[in-house]
Length: 257
Ligand code: NAD
Image (tube, rainbow, N blue to C red; front, side, top):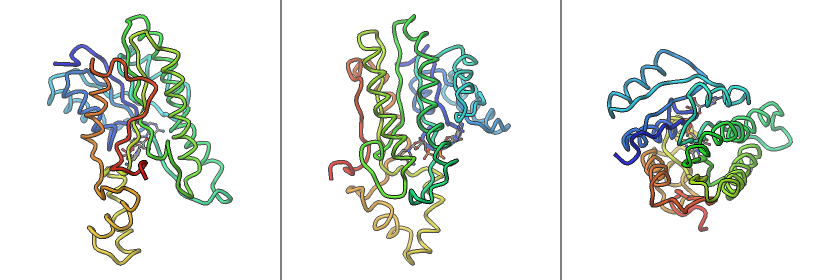
C-alpha cells in the first residue's frame, strides 16, 4: 500500500476530523498514533480497533496539546514520525471586549503553539530520513474572518503562516508542510450544535443547516472527514512532492466569495 512503513502521528484524533484523517492514513497503509488529553480505555480501544481494521500498527498516546512539553513528549514517546498531522483544536465564541483572557491563551496554545512544538520535535528525524510530511489542519478561518472568533481566527491565520515558514526551512529536503483549510465539516462537535440552532431559529434540521450553518458555504453542503482524510493522503503521496507552503481549501466555495 502507498504509505506502508510510514509512521503517522495525528494530534487530537479520538474524534471528528483527526479520527477521519487517522482512518484515511491507516487505510493507505500507514502506522498511526492517536492522541488526545483524555487517556480513557475507549481511546486505547479505538486505536486497537483501527489498527485491526486496516492491518496496521496503531496506538494511543496521551498528551495535552495546551502544554509545550507534552507536545514534544508526544513525538518522543512515539519514537518520531514520518507524517505529522497537527489537528487538535478548540473554539470559543465571544465579542473581543468580553473574550475571556484564559480562553484566548488556551486557544492559541492548542490551535497554534502545539504545531510549533510538535513540528520542532519531529523535523530532525524527518531530515535524517530525507522524507517527511507536516499537514496542519487550519480552517477557512485561516484565510478569512468572522466576528466573535478572535482567538480562533488569529490562531488559524498563524497556522497558515507557520506552515509557509516550515515549508521554506525544509524545501528541497524531501519534506513538505501545508495547511488544509476546511469550511464546515459535519463532526460530532458541529452535529451537537444542530438541535440548539433548530430551536433558536424555529427551523427544521435541513433548513437550519442550509440557511444558517452553511450560509457562507456556497455549495450548502458540509465537507466530510473522509474528504479531509483523502486530502491528507494525497499530500503524503508522490504526486504532492512539490506541493509545499500552500493551503488547500475544502470549503464548498466559501473563500471564493
Ligand atoms: P472535535 O472536537 O471533534 O475534535 C477536536 C480534537 O482535539 C478531539 O480529538 C479532542 O480530544 C482534541 N483536543 C482538544 N483539546 C485537546 C488538548 N488540549 N490536547 C489534545 N487534544 C485535544 O473537532 P473537529 O471538528 O474534528 O476539529 C478538529 C480540527 O479541525 C480543529 O483544529 C478545528 O479547528 C478544525 N476545523 C474544524 C472544522 C469543522 O467544521 N468541524 C472546520 C475547520 C477546521
